[in-house]
Length: 322
Image (cartoon, rainbow, N blue to C red; front, top):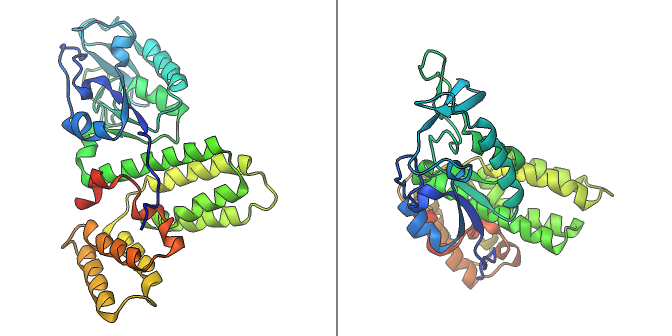
């Protein structure tokens, strides 16, 4: 059975340069992530970015921190608070948002006053961190320009479920970019949604129905007008992590396409493995492997196109750990 999603050229990801081992931090050190530099590096073309160095701060340099209101903090020097780099960091974020139009995702350095996505310490006038953290200045400016782009902090990628979820979204984003390059039509938009049926059911069943209904009511509307709003809702739906329960439900739905083909013994074994997965006894790859094997023996053209069966390269082994 062929892969449901053709994955050939490496998608391009932006990444905080320190995570690739570049010595660009304030103390002339790095924060190399072996996950990124040794595992993901084989599957993605990385674009390394360090906004603090890019705006002219030296190596080594005085550290900066966020101060003020958590929703609108400023980035200032920890020793010399008159050093205020808020505007340069924000301007650089907007600049890079314009230049990095071909990336399919971004991995940021956590807790950074320039690059952190959430829970970055914001200090009040009394010097005490506020209860609610903020977002790094550069990251905020960049993400505002690319609200649909998959973004994640490196630390959260250590969680197998979050890692798989992020990379599902990265490859979906790349898939959509290919679709746009080929030319968006009503037919291609409908077929795209059909291919993502079971992936959406795993992540967000309600949104799958809502998006299908929206396309069904497209009427005479131009696909170029419907497409951007559809894609924004798709990416928001995929951001919700699938659970063992929703995965098991999808596996049962897909196995229904085999009910006229496989033996009673095969049905019993498949159901047993799906149940074991739902109960946390085996990882997702176990029932999926049997399911793929059975579809190689009894191919179904509709299921063969489903992204869910292979939303990312198999040798990433993402479903071995969830």
